[in-house]
Image 1 (spheres, rainbow over the protein chains, first blue to last red):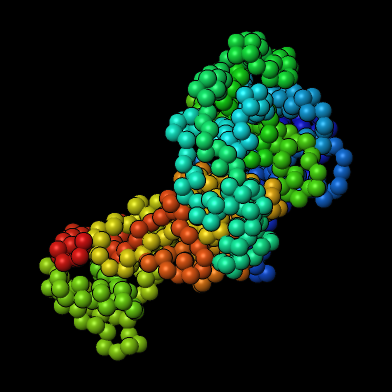
Image 2 (image 1 turned 135 degrees about the horizontal axis):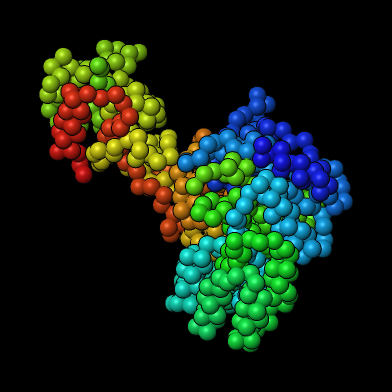
Length: 359
Length: 238
């Protein structure tokens, strides 16, 4: 049985198995993944009014258990049923996985995570696999190197993982500058000429006039800051050269063995420095001591969840389009779940039901 | 088998629906007293004994059409689309009737001078947790419409706060940051210091004659539905 083989292996590398109930409070999932998840999970209500759901995955509850234990670095594993409303697959499915929490040697933890994922598949007897790797932080380093304005930077990072959307953003940023100032109310446009305090004051007056609370939601400072940000971008547009460089980067799709030299070549071709990017790719490659059918680095590969921050990877079996394993680094998840400081976190999940699928 | 038509049980929707059926040349026997919700419709070809008419609330009509308990009915498009994802799989929006106009819109506080479009709202939603320690909150009773529209605009990180009345007051009361609600003239929104985003019209709704695609049907009932649709489409205002 695959699941036992997997959990036995994960126990053998020193993972703890926290107790994760079938029924979970829904809020942590909805808060982290977003309201859209609601349509894809099974939700129910307690008499007290608390919203519960059948566990849609294990990472969030494992992280919550870790935080509640107020622990130092630890490695966890899990295996069992998870539930999601899916169109073409069963709503109940078996998931197993691994989470490495609190290890601040990020690169080492990333390498180890890929290694454990591949060995987990070995333990389950899965052969003929291929690996695909991406890393959002390399894209972020490129944005820094190109000195992309902060407001655009945030937008582009958010779209990372959806290349069509990214290209649309790039077209908008490089095309006709957005005439944002025209849409502003006259009193705010006047205030813009007088500087930031005047804008804040004008926004505050509007909030008071509309009976809006000044605290608890968007503050006049936050609104004024974004007005100024937009005004600053009103006149500028993305230079054609930078757009070309960004698009060239997003097209990089090479064997992992060639990834480091490709990135180095990219850096020298455009006269840019992406600190430690090539080194990380080289390290990913050298951690693969086994024969995979293919291992690729795709520069545009990422997950559109705001808590993913760096490495992402998936393992496929040849001839199938759905991944057997999905993993990555999610350093922002713990703070979303209430941790005061950032906790480094990397892990993967195995879609156990897919392991035995016949072509 | 019985073939059932459902009409709104109260208000202007009911009056307009009744007017429309008589303008189309049908004879509608209304419930005999106020406490009864059962009537009959005569004049549908092949249905000489009359067809059953039930008077239900507009949202109930949507649900009953979706579950296939009634064959045809009049209700607001907003309620029908809100009642189920992929409404087209269950419902045929056969005739737009030209009354009951209302838009489902997303509106933000006027003071959010930096937020004009959904793209702006996307930026604000993405940054909200960082700045304010919680996700952006949208007050609405339109869960499905909101989720669908936000997903179409790539916005995932927000929360819905259920609001069953006076939704437009939620931002001032500090219960939510923005709202999704129905409006016909926009004056209530304005009075509450709210502004519709430039691309914030989620649905331009009006009363529709809707045919259930999932109700059990035979030759006779299919013909009856078709006859009602074609008669009403001739007299509907658009």
